[in-house]
Amino acid sequence: MKKHAMLQNAETSMTDPVSICSFDYEAIEKPTRALMHQASRFWYFKKGHGKISIDEAEYELKPNTLVAVTPWKISDVVEVDDTLQLIVLVYDYQYINSTLQGLNVLEVDCAELLAKLEVSPVCYLDSIQAERMDMLMDDLKQELGVESTLRSPVHKPLGFLYVTNKLIELMVLYNRYVMAGMGDPGEDTSNQKSIMSYIYAHSSEKLTLSKLADVFYMSESTISKEIKDTTGAGFNKLLTSIRIEKATDYLLYTDMNLNEIAHSIGFVDASHLSKHFVTKTGMTPLTYRKTYAKVKRQYALTSKEAAYAIVDYLHKNYTNEYLDGEEVAGTYGLSVSEMNRSLLYYCEKNFDTLLNYIRTNKACELLTSTDLSILTVAVEVGYRNLKTFNLNFYKFLQMTPSEFRDRVTFQRRDGKEEHIRSKRKQ
Image (tube, rainbow, N blue to C red; front, side):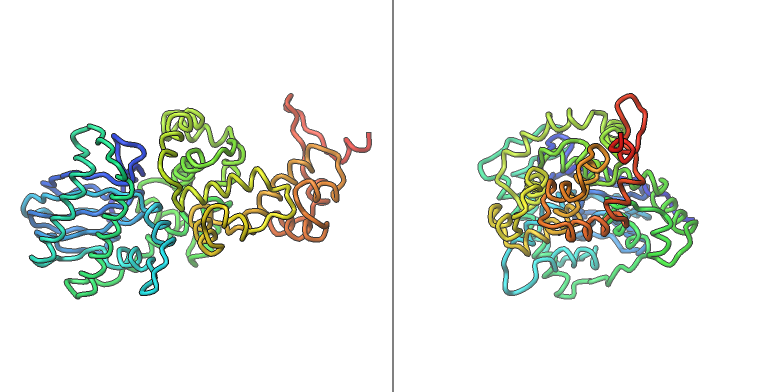
């Protein structure tokens, strides 16, 4: 029988909320509970012997074993023959991914560095490789401090850049060691990973068990059981956790209001978002933004921040009919392809789709709260002609603006509803 996996939090550090990486020591004396990881990590086992399961594939643990865990993988130390002593690095996967995507390297696609972590989660180091890894780990320890001391590290000049460089160096070494054939364990093809990855990638959509069943050619009950067996939580609870994780980025990197954020990540409205956010984090979204947003922005603009800055920009300027992707990308120091890669990764939509999505949402507000003509609504939200407006509106809502206005009611502050069409006839 499968163990339930406990969903581990997404923070890289409990003492420093803006850290992209933390360093710590750990000892494992007995088998652990299965964990599903939201934050990526490296485990560098220095002493002891045992076995670890990663997405149900089992690997030996021995001195100088380096384990890479990427988001939504499930790990479980299933056997401990001799106490395992290890170094734990927890890092911001999305930040590193966006940094790698922004690098122009002719020799190799930088995304391969992360891909190797996915397919080869365990690497066994020889003595020379281990010596170099020890030095790298010591550099990170000196920079980051030790997490379990519960003291925030002293921020050093250019520390953010230094740690980023060291993490990329670590990934390059990992890639080289695996390619050298030092115990490459092979590829991971577990169905659970595919399901979890799909949920994460499509969490802003109206995702249902029925849709997952269609995608994976499985019954709803089977999908539900897979999720329950894997996480110990139901589908809805897992989906909510993922959406709240994404909400924190919108709160930190944009000035979007709560309704706009809610619509962007899949919640019905601001109230729905706030309710789940408080349950998950213990504070309101606005309190979270006030507490952490200014701290996050002390660093130079990253690809991650640029993606959310562009989202913010589009929400403020969607009415401009001349908005151009190339011009917007240039404003943030990105090429169009870099901008779209970042937007797709963090927001699940490229520039054009995101712009039309925002315009359509704003059009819905006008159609249900005013008696403006449909042509006027189209112009108000940034479209040059009615045909383009109708095509994009139908793409997102599967109905025309006229049909939407006839079917949808407007709820007043007193809770009463009225059809806008009948309102216009009065």
